[in-house]
Length: 96
Image (spheres, rainbow, N blue to C red):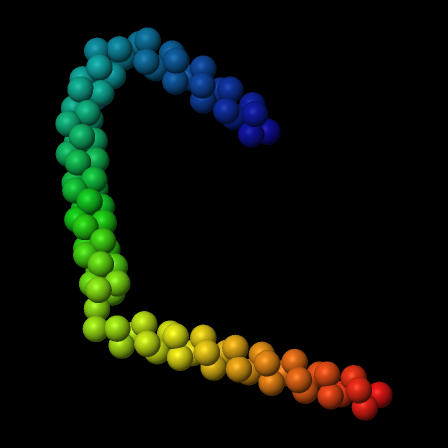
C-alpha cells in the first residue's frame, strides 16, 4: 500500500514540476538563501559551543586539582574494596 502511494506521489510530483516549472524555480531560488541563513546560524552556534567545551575541558585539566584528587582517592578506595572482596571470597572458599 505504501509502495503504491509512493509511486502515485512520485508521478504527481514529476507532473507538477513540469507543469509549474517557473514557480518551482522561483520557490527554489527563494528557499536557498533561507537554507543558507539557517545553516550558517546553526554552524556558528555549534562552533561557539565547541569552543566553550574546549575551554571547559582545558580548565578541568589545568584546574586546582581538587576534582582530580577526588577521582584518584575514589580509584584507590575502589581498588581496596576489590581487594577486600577478593580476600573474603578466598576465605569462604577455604572454609568449604
